[in-house]
Length: 427
Ligand code: ATP
Picture 1 (tube, rainbow, N blue to C red):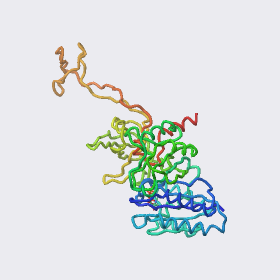
Picture 2: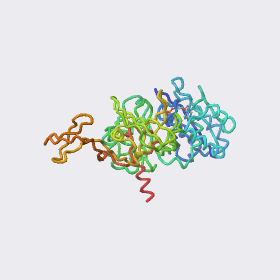
Picture 3: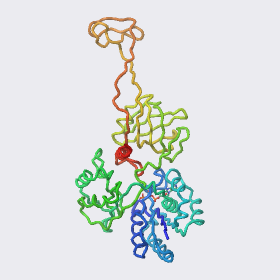
Picture 4: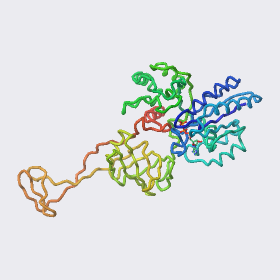
């Protein structure tokens, strides 16, 4: 029989990682005779979820096993989660098991959990009426992610991540990964992996910054090359073991294309509109502008950690046509879209008003006073009827796609480097 085990909310800000729990569960299930039916799944859910610890990840383990072994495997799964979850410090773990037939009815639930907020009561009812078994502690909130992971649509699991785990004595300590070897690995495997290094901020991206069991993660499009990429890294500490996960990372699955008038908080949207308020840059380096599509207008926020993209955004002008990809936040002044990617579709003509040039010597003239004309600074020519003139000036940015710095990118957002590969595949 095919069984899908979903696990979520095993970690707190202080320790643990649901992928680690999933990987251990998988090993223990295998030792009981269960067989992997696929890679374990690392499923990213709504990145705006207020209950998340960090990246809103949940895990599903697809297993093939003999029906009489189910109880034994299930008990081991629950015992493992009880043993490893950081309950008491913020984790509310949930574990579920579904068979293949009932899983196929969970796809909508999955998409909802990626794009919106899901109700806990609805989830518990679903587990009671449809699951092979379920278990939860605390507020039981972990059941939401556990069910959503089981419901993952396989066609959306198009990328992979190799996660290498540290030995327990190293948990919470500085990660010993040589940055130069990460750059070298990126040079060698850059076409098949992504997000290894943030060259804009000169920062290693394969290592997390949290006190969890993960030493590093290498993301890629082909699961087979990931162990080779790992083998090239220079590490100053041992790897306890590694596991390759199949994921919905870098898929843009969280976005919903909509009119500005219908955007809702805590969702991620793609909106197309015109710039109706020019960008302003605050002291802290954050940039804000406004777009409208006729159905409404909304503030787009581009915060300092997003990096270089702010230089482009700050050069937008009124009437520029743009597509904004971002997450919707509720602010006291109204809804704001936090920018993740920007497509500049059409740059408007930038017309500026300038003093006229002298008809005799071409030097820029100086105003004599309001309505009193202009006088040439060089030859002294006075034109009492001369007025300001409108001039079209060149734009400092070009049309195209822009994205936030790698270090500011959410796991589920598709990097532009992969857009380019997508386009090449369609040639
Ligand atoms: P990590 O990425 O480090 O594994 P996390 O960011 O995944 O941690 P969790 O500790 O798993 O955070 O907490 C997220 C909680 O939010 C879980 O209880 C999960 O069930 C719940 N959750 C996830 N998505 C949704 C959603 N769309 N609506 C409501 N609850 C959700």
